[in-house]
Image (tube, rainbow, N blue to C red; front, side, top):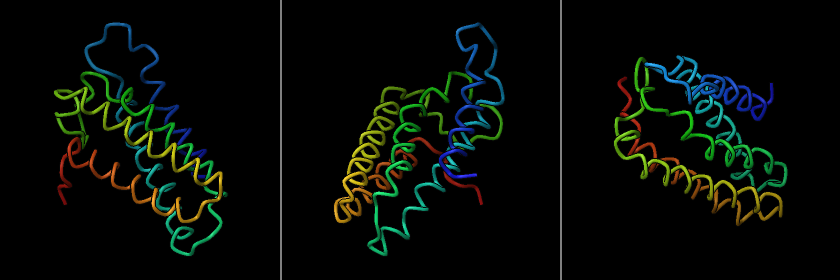
Length: 153
C-alpha cells in the first residue's frame, strides 16, 4: 500500500474512534490511540521516504502529494488527542492536555511548514524543498520534545 494511502487509512481508523466524541463517554475508544500511533508511524514513513530524493537532488515534484498528506495529518492531529486518551500504551506527554493551546500551536506550525513543503515540491524547487524539509523536521522534533515522553528503550 502506498504511504499516502496508509496514512489515510490510519487517520480514518483514528477518526472512527472520534465519531461519537460529542456523546458522553468515560474514555475514548482505544482506536483513537491506535489510530494516532499508526498515523505517526506512517507520517514518519512518508517523511523519511523523501530524504533520498532530497539527498540526491532529485525531482521533488513527485513528493507533492506526500507533503500535502503530512500537512493534512498535522491539521488532523490535535483531534486524535481527545481528553482522556492518555490511557494505555501511549507516549503522549501529559502536556498535550495540560498545555492544549501550545500543543495545537505546535501542530499548526507543523501544518504550515508541511504546506510550504508541498508548494515547493509542486514548483519542483529542489533547493527550496531541501531547506524546507529541514524546517518540517525541526517543527516535528520540537513538538515531540515538548509533547512526547522520552523513549523507554
